[in-house]
Image (cartoon, rainbow, N blue to C red; front, side):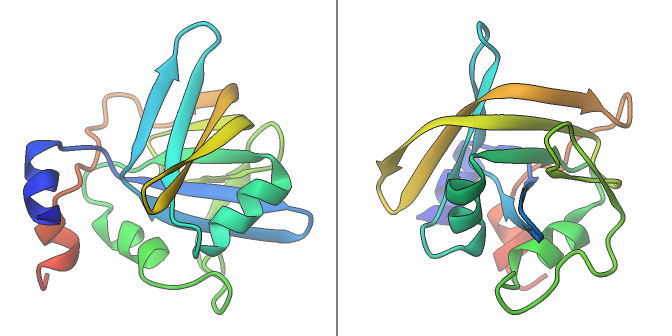
Length: 155
């Protein structure tokens, strides 16, 4: 069923990053969306078991790093390991957004948000927030599109 939903509702692939004190982490997410023009707001769905979930709750902010076409390996890097056990940023180039969230050098764009609220959506928590920083890092770049089989189909 999940592969069918992915085919019917294509989305971009993002790495959601967060910094809280001296802890940083990132996770791959495809359930990301803009939720308002005025004020500019965005949101992301994160499973409660993920380390990033706890850090977003503690930090009160998150950053959405849009990945470009050809960055599936980077998406897998941030998607198939836990930040509780592995330093995902050890060999990854990044800078910091306005409030300190990691911005991946490989991203084509980023949006940093202050959390305004969250709600339970099935087996995920949907965090939504006001945009406090954003930028386009690579003009004219095509985004990486999530396809179930690219990540879970044996590739």
